[in-house]
Length: 194
Image (tube, rainbow, N blue to C red; front, top):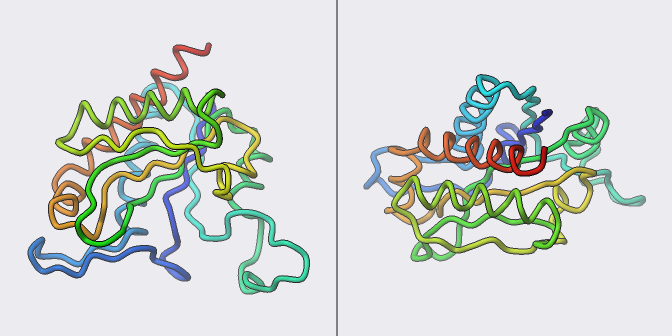
């Protein structure tokens, strides 16, 4: 089983959402949290016998003709790399952000009735069972580039709201529990399909 892991955003170009509240005694950047969780997911999946490829970049899909937003990025995009590598599963890891009050975990897929929806349900269930979080469910998001341009079942995991103090603490104190849950969700999906 080949699992492509995409920690969200990019350390150089776009750090994603940021939590500045000093109540957690550390500033959190989405790109750093996603990379920490993604690296642990890779470790756990490799121990379980999966082959993994980890790529963090905000250059997600081919840029439409006429746009030059990403001329400073070179090489293959995240979705092109996953497709060319022949991944069986694609997992993008993120932190949500809204108004500072929203909480919880959600897992997004292209369409719920496909294998991506099944993968999303397994991961969502494992996270909800592992940490004290609000279950925001599985959601269809066909407009997301990493879900639209991948050839394999793909999900985007919004682990917690980085701009909420309680959820930020989950990201600081339970990042490894989240990583283990994502890995278990992937292996649950693999066992159900193969």
